Each structure stands twice: as C-alpha cells, then as structure tokens.
Amino acid sequence: MHETHWVAAELHELAGHAHRTAAEHNEKGKEGDAIWHAERALEYSEHACRLAKESQNKSGQMVTV
Image 1 (tube, rainbow, N blue to C red):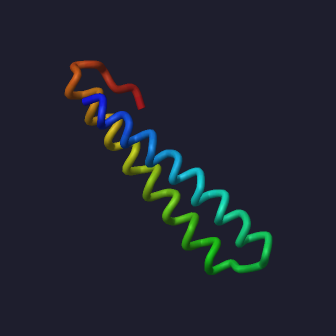
Image 2: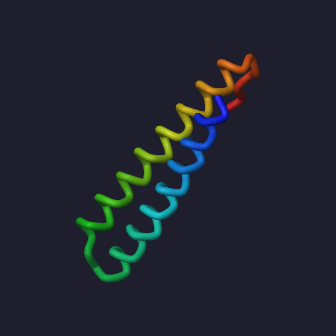
Image 3: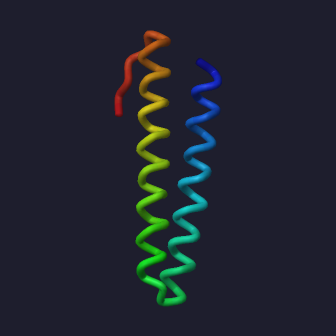
C-alpha cells in the first residue's frame, strides 16, 4: 500500500513537469505541443488521484475527494 502512495506522488511530479512544459510551449507559440503536454498532465494527475483513492479505500479510511 505504501508503494501505491509513492507511485501516486511520482505521477503528481510528472503532471507538474508536463504542466511546466506545456507552459513553455505556450509561451513559444507552439499551441499544439502545449495542448499535448497539458493533456498528459491531466492524465498523470487523474491516474495519481485514482491510485490514492484505491490506497485509502484498501486501508479502510474514508475518501473525501
């Protein structure tokens, strides 16, 4: 279960990196690349959220997200 939390944290870090990359591409006027990276950020973030919820449910704690 602890490993799941670590994986979720890593996915959140990847999401942050993807958001920063999207912002950089947006500043350079590369809208297509910015959108692609923003979509990856959302996917990473959603996956991390699912893992965190699963981990909490398995530990018997109530999820309030």
